Image 1 (cartoon, rainbow, N blue to C red):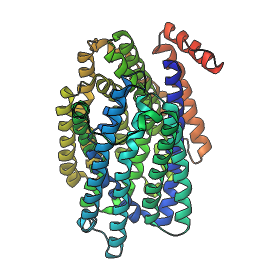
Image 2: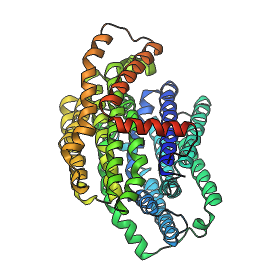
Image 3: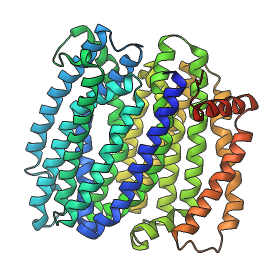
Length: 507
C-alpha cells in the first residue's frame, strides 16, 4: 500500500478511535460519578496516577521497537525477529517486576492519603488490580509496536476501537450491578487482556514467521534498543511528573475530593491533545524512515505539514474550550463540578502548548536525536514538581496548573522547536512563522469577533453549543486553508482527497 494511503488510513482510523475513546470516556464520567460519588472517583484518579509511574519501567522499548522496525521496509528480515523477541523477553521481565512492586505497595500505600477507614481495603484491592493491568500492558505493547512499526495503522486502530467498545459495555454493566469502584479496575484489566488477545491472533495470522519464537536475547540487538530507549525512559519520566503528579499533589495537600473536580476539567482539556497528537504520531514512522534514508526534502515537508495541521486543529479546540468549555462541563457533569474559569483557561493553554511542540518531539524521536532535549525535559518535570508544590500551598488548585504552565513555558515550549530545526538543519525563522505563528495568529484574530458573538448568549443546551463550535471551526478552517496553506499544496491535497474517495491510486 502506498505511503500516503497508509498515512490517510492511519490518521482517519486513528481519529475514529480518538473520537470514540473520548466520547465514551466523557459519557462514562457522569455515570461513574452518579454510581460511586466524587470521593471514590478521586481515589480512582489518584490510583491511576500512582500506577502510571510504573509505566516508566517501559524504558521506551515499545517506541524503540517501532522505530527500528519502521526503518526496515519488510517484516521478513531476521533482524526484525530478533528485535521482537528481545523486546518481548525484556517486557516479560519488566511485567514480573511490576507485579512484585504492586503487591508490595498494596499493603500500605493508600494509607499515605487521607482516606476513610471503610474505603482503605477496597482502595488497596483496586490499586492491586490496576497494577496487574499495568503489568499485562507491557507484553501487549510489544505486539502493538510491531503493528505500528510496520505501518499497519489500520489494524492497530481497529483493535483499539474494539477495546474501547468492550470497555464501555463492561463498565456500564458492572456499575449497574453495584460493584462500585472495583468495577473500574476489573474492566481495565479485562480490556487490556482483550486487546492483547486480538493483537496476538492477528499477528500470528498475518506474520507467522515473525513470532515463531518470542523468547530470545541478542546482546547486539538489546544494546541497540537500549541506546534509544534509555533516552525515552528519561522523557517518559518527565511526562509522568508533568501529568501524573498533579493528582497526587492535590490528593495529599487538598484532599481526595478535590482530585475529582480538577481531573474532570483536566481530562476534558487533555482530550483535545488526543486529536492533535494523532497527526504528528502518525508521522513518526515516516520521520524515522526518511531520516535513515537521508531524504531530507521529504522529512522537512512532513515536519512542516504535521506541525501546521496539528497547531491549526489545536487552535480550533483551544477556542472552543475558552468560549464554550464551562457550559460544556455544566451540561456534562453539572456546574458544581466546574473547577473555575482561570484554572480552566490555563489548562486549555497547557494543552495548546503541548500540541505546538508535539510534532517536533516526534520528529526528534524519528531522528534518534534525544540527547539534547533529555536534560531540558527533566528540568521541566522537576520545575513543574517544585512550582506545583510551592504554589499549591499559596493558591490551591490554581497553583497546581500554574506550576505546570510555568515549567513548560520556560523549557520545552521553546527548546523543542529550536532543537528540531538545528538537528534537521532547518531555518527556525521559516519553521516558526509558517507552521506556528500563522495558525496561532489566525486564532487570536478570531477571538474578538467570537467573543462579541458569544456575549450575552446562554449556552444552555447541546444544540446551541454544537452549532457555535461548528461555526467557529468552519470559519477557522476556511481561513486556515487560504491563509496558511499555499496554492500548490491546496491543489495537491484536493487531488489526493479526490483520488482517495474514488479509491484510485494516490500516487
